[in-house]
Image 1 (cartoon, rainbow, N blue to C red):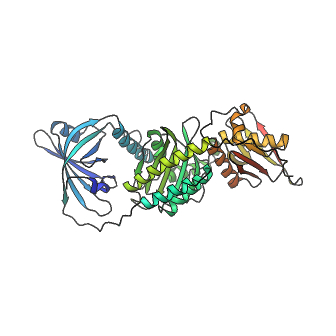
Image 2 (cartoon, helix red, strand yellow):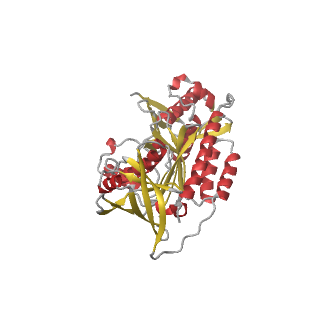
Length: 444
């Protein structure tokens, strides 16, 4: 065997690889290596993080032997390698750096695990190592699932339907039970969840900065990151936050919506969603099963991520619609106690009573809708008028207004029993009010 294609499962980092080298005088050395990265059928790349004995030996004697292990079958293979070069920039280096950064961010080692270079080797020979092994699990072609999901998306007429059908297809066609789609915010610094499936709480509206964790690093580097061993970032983050709240430090915590996630996540895959060279967001899937996502799952979801990005971009541009029909508001029962809706101008956050609803762009939008309703009894609105309304003083939201409206619609459905946003046509929607309210603006 001379191609590494048949043993790509060994190169996922689930089981540490052992690299053996020799100094110029023949003194051997063996150590563990963080990554043995698949480049193509004839080449692999090893991560260069520290100038250690392995690095010194390879520069003096450009031959190495690596033992890799298949995590599914326990089969072992010995790779005879010839060192060719070290890359410190370019696509290969960025992919390896992103994966390492994602792992480091999850383990709190971001300041320690830093890729210095990608050492590229030619594979001279691959020999199986005599050892016990388990039967290989069956593989299935993902092309039918890919086709089924593409067919679903092609029939969708709005972004909400695209997101719903996409997540449903992941569950029914790919067997992926836990997934979320995040969009990039207007400033390009944070991602916010616009749809999820499989979690106890949807987490719609939750945010994560670029460069943080598997999701943030995949977005920042615009490269997929796949990790097939246990991480505990979400559980740790939730535990720290809960402890702070129990300790009476709640006022020191930023108002936020908790990011959904499995407490026992053991396999994770984050795929950047890019259209026309522009980052639209991230698709993230996870599982409590070790080694759930293999390289063919990554390939399939990268293809679907590109289609999702194109659909998001096209439907956003097509969501202008017509001017809304001005219809009389349905009368609201007058006997009920008015709910207090507070809007804080400092960050656009909105509270209904004491319950946090939303902030930022979506918060400014719901404030406008409620103000127009209070002043004019208006219930019908359009995307176009929101884009053109200078009084909102919003950033340029031309590329994700529809996503913000979907976010607002879902948060209202989850957190408020008397306000609803309902689609009435292309680029048009209606505000439904089922209880009197009093809008209070809190200045900065």
